[in-house]
Image 1: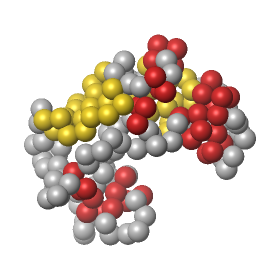
Image 2: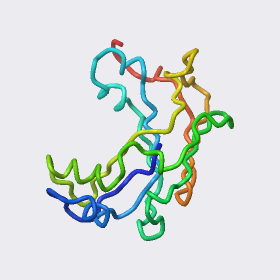
Image 3: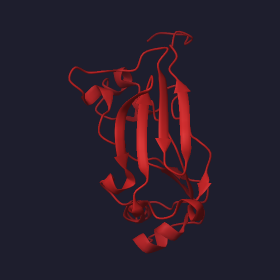
Length: 162
């Protein structure tokens, strides 16, 4: 996952330059999409909001990280194997432009967290499809931010119909 941005001052109708200066810091994030739930609808909301999804690493302040346009290395490993490898330079939409765009629809407030895309290599887009299984270990590493490590567990603890 690309670095996650934490907003430190309100943004409404902001320019890209203003938006960049409002960022408090960055963190690693792993959405751990529940693909079966995601495929049940044309929207991604269910798949992106499953129980125990969305672990977030510690926040590193923007002044420590610097400008994402300089390119932070982003890697994801599953069971020690690199499955995604890119840099923040590869982001389709630059951070300031993204925050500016959002701020023209809704106000971003201090503490809001924005999580964006991922480098090439997600399992459901591979041939053959490769989905995470209970017991897998996922590591999301972002230069200057550290490594977020998550074990994949079964959802057998859930109660009720599926």
